[in-house]
Image (cartoon, rainbow, N blue to C red):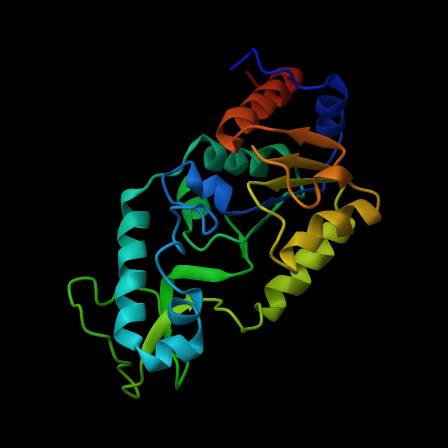
Length: 252
């Protein structure tokens, strides 16, 4: 771990920064064994996204969509937060005005200890009725292959994720935009930077004076705009950054 080199000027910047924002994407959860959507053998490889992640697909074949999301939940429930998730959770204590924005729906950040997470794409743990919009935060239908129905109106229940063709949660998007504009340091971690409007947040931060850092094993569409680029998984580099900050602050 200590062989990884972190520029001293970056550590100095982080030590003297308060407004630090982290945006995470599917690559962070991939380190926990949850495949990304764009992997050749990933979650979308064997299915048509329009059939499994759209309201039209759900209304045409709700049982198929529900069964597929139940399968995804099973994978998530068997997964654990990885060192990347845990390092990000520690940032809450190191920076007085830290914020975490995620495109992930698995809530592994919550399980790692992060709170006040801004979920741009909703989450797969909660569900709600398509008719009366009653939310169900408990695990429903885990042992039942049939589509669960709303207890109030008997409408179909769907996962609380943002599907293709749907708007992102307005409050989450407004907050993410504000935090990005006001950040001093912005981390883009494990995201392909291909899905908008999330992909625009690092650029928005940079336009407003923030230092932007990309953590991703691969080049992305916005890599050339980054001030620092770490071509490795978040679980390898972020714990080292946290360790260096703690050393400099005399916390270890």
